[in-house]
Image (cartoon, rainbow, N blue to C red; front, side, top):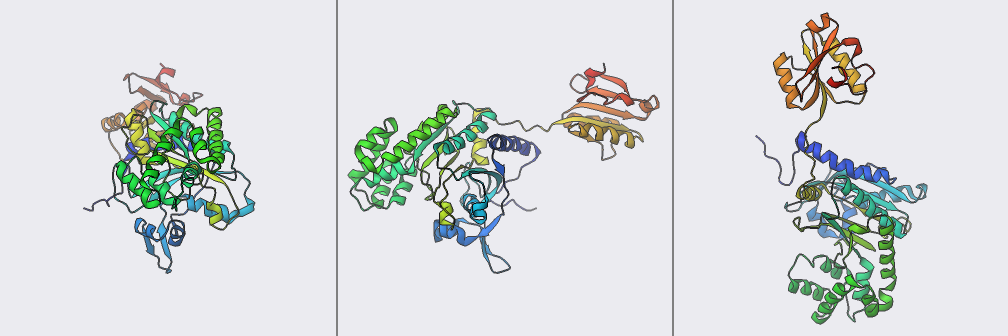
Length: 433
């Protein structure tokens, strides 16, 4: 017997049914907002991730040399790939470009709650608009998907921040500062002790006194952005105005109730450039970020394309499932079968014809493929949760009838075979009693 590889998961039918509802909600929300689905490869050149994140990223990848001698990697995220797609088509694409995609990703990291080596995300991105409305629409797509799953404002919040607000405040200090390192330190603020957080800021170039002042400014600024303008002036004012514009647009898009200004939210990836946000469980029971997103206006240009503003979000399967389960709205995953067509005797041609007709009307229909007896078929129909059983038996057919059985009540009735399914879109026992 072979063991499953660490960090990878199996999903049985009941689990897949629940996951399908989750992804249907995410994809359905994207489609309602006019996003178009794309497909992308599972392999990219390893150098693409090295150029974006440095040589150290290789240790986190499933990378190898293929039979053609190319250094390739299973993709750990989609953003560089969609940036490549935008560059490949260049000016042929009508702006704004609104794309979504659901697919697996791979990262060689230590598995833990809500984190696996193979995981699934729905990526939703807008390219070609720097307007606050684009940021707000990304927030709206995410919020609509979560509420479609049954979550409410009591269950989740979007903590919204702005990378240029953070870098503007940091730049106002008289220090030789490593801004990306300082931003990464802010991203870890909630996960490490205060002393360690200040150590990280000091390593980035702040004094310990400056680190403490910066920390106080983030707290004050989350209540009153004018506090940051008073301290940092021109370093921060344009970014503050942009953040205010995004929050105002989010209000008009109907998602302000889910948004909280939180300047401690930084997103650790260096390619973020403007508004960023993370979704959190409002109760704190899911202790880590559920998912996040934000602006990455420079990425397409860094791949050789023209300047192209971009903003996106990427809900992942594992953490979103944790949130839904905590809130009690995770789909039950019960298989749905509308009809079971039971065969008793040499009646396959008639039974198959009825099954085909019911399927043509969009119903889930099963019939016997294992040569089982009457009782075994009826037991199977009950096991799969069939709502209605259509019994096609030799004796009934002698009278040109079939039997319709309601599985919940146990009641049944005979119906002329030429009248089933007839004109009924979804014929059940109640239509013929």
